Length: 406
Image (cartoon, rainbow, N blue to C red; front, top):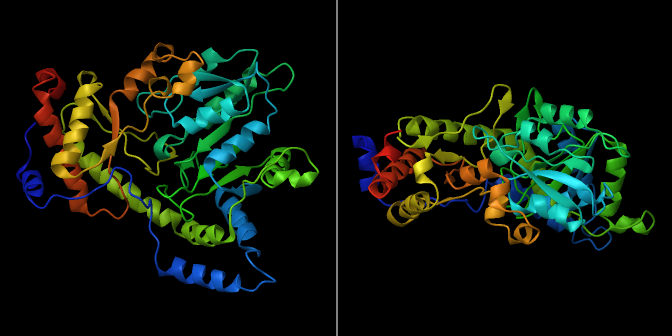
């Protein structure tokens, strides 16, 4: 895998420090500092404290951004997912279909309410849940479909909604499609913003995400008044009147930061997209590398740039190349994500195995995400691409020429 003179010159220069997941997904500036300082000073009044309209205004602005009736700020995407599952009143025989390739929080929300996780395969071209496989796994006990907008790319929400309509539950009707959009704030699907389609959508504002609220935070969006009422009350102990609840609330200062981040979200995502497209351009001729694609009508916001390697690179060869990227060139990378049965011991104990989802298991052993951030320079992006090529070239001798000739 020969490097160009420009690529070799980049790697021969100063070793860079480009972490796999940058500690801040977007950026903060003096606008946040000034707004947070003002809010903190206002909160020094003992009659006001940390009350005020910032949280409700953040919710209103986010709902307007997504074109939905309701948005509720919560303290994480994980707790938002928990609340969404609790809103369904699921029982031990009820099933929720989850993509095999996702972060553990998606399935854990189902486990947490005592329902059954049913894993569905993911597409090789998008790493999102495969609607055809979802339909194959629908049963009389299916109560919900829980797609994930993988690494910033929306799942096919219309196809999933059609499947739900064709397979209604005998008691509860069509299973709601509830989206995990932890990594997809600002993304788009067929002319709508992520957050519009589906019964509920849950976002993350954790520190590495495309927009952040001082380290943690999230939002639940919905057009359904009943789900809205449940999420609103359950995040505040049910108000002591409406049944079970706990504390899922966001803080005033987080909301202050979130409002500014939301106003900047499209700008930050535009830069992410620009960086991702340049990386694809740099990797277009790399043997053994399949660059990620965006289907027509979708707006990818590139929380992660998912590289898929040729089959010969599955497992150890991929891992060795990733290790070399870090040790030799300072470029971080990681697997986002392996198929759940390959790394979630909770699901393993419940009987899930890699053989249940062979397509996703294979994909999860071949994919990885290199460092990506909207503030990377062009040379940073080219350096990342060169480090991938150089590291694969170093490892290539141990996996055979076929792996680098594809």
